[in-house]
Image 1 (cartoon, rainbow, N blue to C red):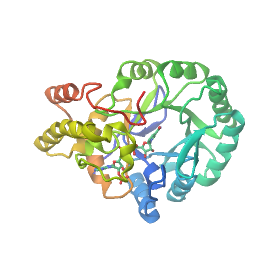
Image 2 (image 1 turned 45 degrees about the vertical axis):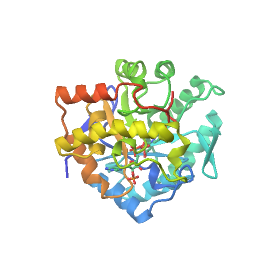
Image 3 (image 1 turned 90 degrees about the vertical axis):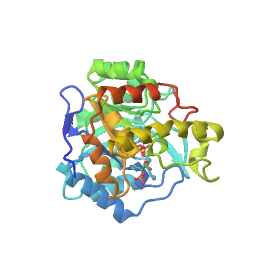
Length: 323
Ligand SMILES: NC(=O)c1ccc[n+]([C@@H]2O[C@H](COP(=O)([O-])OP(=O)(O)OC[C@H]3O[C@@H](n4cnc5c(N)ncnc54)[C@H](OP(=O)(O)O)[C@@H]3O)[C@@H](O)[C@H]2O)c1
């Protein structure tokens, strides 16, 4: 399998794999299925064996199930893994019902996370969103306190605005920004990505396949119970037109001898040395294909063709990433 190189996460930050493993879809989130536990643990361990040390979880992924899984997978090999945990989302019966970013809540969350993960320190701890009801200063200040206490090593943030990023970084240095980014979702290129670069903050880019749109495997119309139908991007004519766009990605992928998913990951990877594609892989069989994507290099013409074809705004309709 492809050797995964390392990148510093943020200015003078820790060395982590240039490809991250997203563990979210191993657990039931948004009412989805829980993946086979044996396969999930084997996938995390195979990723670690192949140099993918960045593992991404959240305390609300499967109501703690995801952290328990990660904890089992890293048992006896803590030092092989870099653990990134999000907090703050409140789910009930598989539905997002709000955010709780109060300092008192964060102090409660972290102890549960440490127990579930079976570790003493979380490498990267981050609010999953910001919330106008709790000042950014209080949220970031609480994580800074946890860093002083030794329960957390680095501060991260997720899905925030450029202004919030600047404010957070002025309170405590931000090591990483976790953000949705793909050929289909490029809005952050105008302000957030330049701000992260200027501040020396590493970018952990998720949803590289745009909820599966860029895998080339989606067909219209979707089954009536498909969760994608919640998002306008996957409804009616939008989906038909968006899949036509994806045909170009499929053609370029075929010409280069790769899959559309590999090109979607490679495009994100190619956006900078400080940008990590964070990819969901719930089974070991995904690893060879997705790690090979990290070897792909685009010619200037290919990059130009992709950037033009998938210019910001060219994919119709939104997902929960609509900003
Ligand atoms: N901060 C946030 O707000 C936020 C939001 C969402 C996600 N995340 C994190 O980011 C990670 C990635 O996000 P994501 O799951 O939304 O996006 P993604 O990585 O694009 O994955 C979407 C889907 O693509 C599938 N896939 C992966 N490799 C494939 C391949 N080679 N061919 C065909 N399909 C393939 C995955 O299936 P399988 O699962 O079956 O392998 C998954 O269901 C998550 O695991 C989570 O840790 C963060």
